[in-house]
Length: 399
Ligand SMILES: Nc1ccn([C@@H]2O[C@H](COP(=O)(O)OP(=O)(O)OP(=O)(O)O)[C@@H](O)[C@H]2O)c(=O)n1
Ligand SMILES: [Mg+2]
Image (cartoon, rainbow, N blue to C red; front, side, top):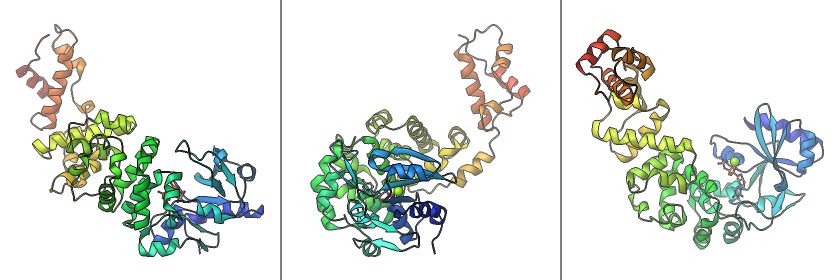
């Protein structure tokens, strides 16, 4: 009756039940199962207290034990197992000040953000749906559980989450929920930026990103986000036709290309991004600028890391009407005379031998770069003797 990945997680529910506690699959995994979408992480909710879970399973990581959450590792998969709870205030806007563990699932489902996320499932596949989440899944509606104002006051990240679910699922946001989002949206300013960027990245990666962006625009929520709060015009630049961007580096590259006055450095600082995201954004922007002037050629494909090809293609397709594909790039890459500088048939030592009177200095690097470019563009054969002949005609500027 159950399908993977629930089947793999079944022993966890069974073990908890053998100890006379209740346990259910809960949240996004149940929602995605009912929608026939790919199921991400399987989360579990239980009446057992975290200390008990630690006793029942050999590998437990106490990630948020004070909030009732531990991770149970089973066959190399991590499961978040959270004790039924109700939350106190969220004065730090990140975690509830206090949580109270409870024995029944009802109130635990009641504290959750949206009806479509307040669904649970037993080990026999029976769905527990106290707020007509299934009705909302059928009608494609995002609606808060109970009073929206309260739900958003408890955690204003839920406002961004509503946008991201509309973008991932293509759902409408219920008009009452939308009203409550607008009432609370100024609270977004006090959220931890990392939490916002996580949801914002998912918004841009959603299959129905245009729906999510349209809500972002019409509600004015963007005015409470880093960068947008100081540059609200930014929003006007986003093209009406936009396709999903799968990483935050792509999102930053897009915004910088739309509004070059805001540097990548600013974006990365304001959104607290990792160096990896920064590196990706910079590489994509360089490649895009080069592409606009030169089109796809050997040098573009050679200079861009292959892992960024898909991101590059997505950026080009959003900003230009031309369709460029990953295969277009790979075809060029496969015909390149060299794939990296290490493959050059000449190196720094060879150059020093050729010009023993030159001191080591920037000329070496310049020379190697020039040779690399000649070889990549196919004008020069990657053969030491031929490269040496070319150097004789293009001697280094001495320093
Ligand atoms: N601010 C939040 C975050 C989460 N939740 C609840 O916790 C569950 C798990 O949260 P999370 O994994 O962040 O979201 P999912 O709905 O599981 O979405 P995804 O598939 O992207 O993980 C949600 O379904 C929801 O019931 C909530 O009520 N309020
Ligand atoms: Mg989840």
